[in-house]
Image 1: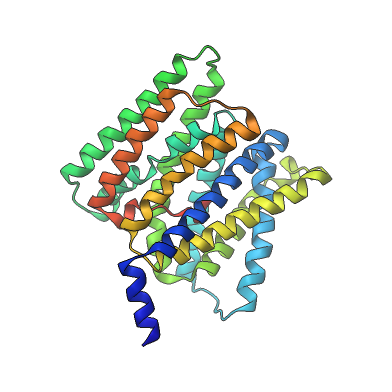
Image 2: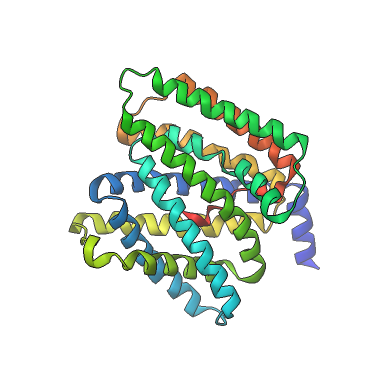
Length: 306
């Protein structure tokens, strides 16, 4: 009875889930900033390899202490497939992030839910509505404005253009990840998903370890552990929020990441945000909010990938 009253009050005025979701976005934004520093310091491969291993150990400890059952073969296949897609997201996104201002990379990544809607039509047979088309046009216009700002910069470089391309490629994989995430959430608990996702990514990356792996300097182990903990904490808080409030209330909090990215990019990297980045991000966010009205389940963010 008390649980029913609690659930009802949260759905009517979901203040606590919204605040918790906003905190999750803050933690994950801090993780992005720390990841950018680590990628610059030791490269994309070693950053992802050691972070995945640390996250696997932490998630494994959490999974082993609670009620658990070994996943079936079909669920393991789904874990492995999503881990492969997540691996592509991580490599492309963080490689691009190391070459772009933090706010610019985060703004471009917001277009992922729009890709998810089109992939849902392609893979799940869903009908593409007129709203989705207009939302996608707004998102593409936002990307074009950000790109135009890059070309107008005095410090524009070919490396920045490659970074932009990498982030956009990561959003395509992330869109597919959203669809896989819906299927995965129906079959496994969040702790199990976090464990096997990080484990699978670590195993795949470890295949190249004899040639590419380098032990990070001693002063980087604490930051590596920090990004793993920030990632897992953000995932947990995000899952908690979406279990207690409707997506329509929580989706807008995702875009607070852009504000955090502006502040963190300025504080840690001395990055300035061009007006074209602000304008482009606004167009992308507007498109995603329209998309959320079309299909809130696919438009809502899944932060478990990073």
